[in-house]
Length: 126
Ligand SMILES: [Zn+2]
Image 1: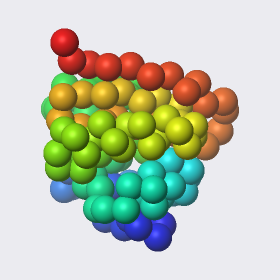
Image 2: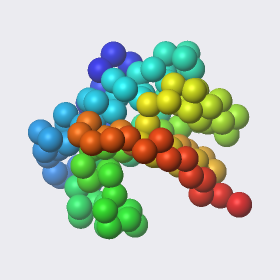
Image 3: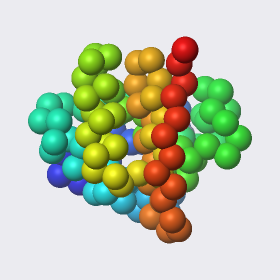
């Protein structure tokens, strides 16, 4: 995992256990997307949300088929809007991602361990 710890990706409900399949997917997300981004960015990246059990995903208003429930997605931030913009560009340049969604205060990024990655970029702000 290098720059990240498994604990950073545990469900925030505090009650469930991350399934082995989801853990393997998180590891692939870290290796392919997050570690290269962290390496290029050179400063700490914070994980707001990683794996979510279905109950917690519903509780936080996640979409029904959210990749968070498979451990394929993480919401990350550098702590600043400018830093997030830099990070977004670094992830795009690296080219390894399934979805990269830019929100006002964080980035949602996903990676599929099995299947093809779409390199889809979206933004959720005006
Ligand atoms: Zn949970």
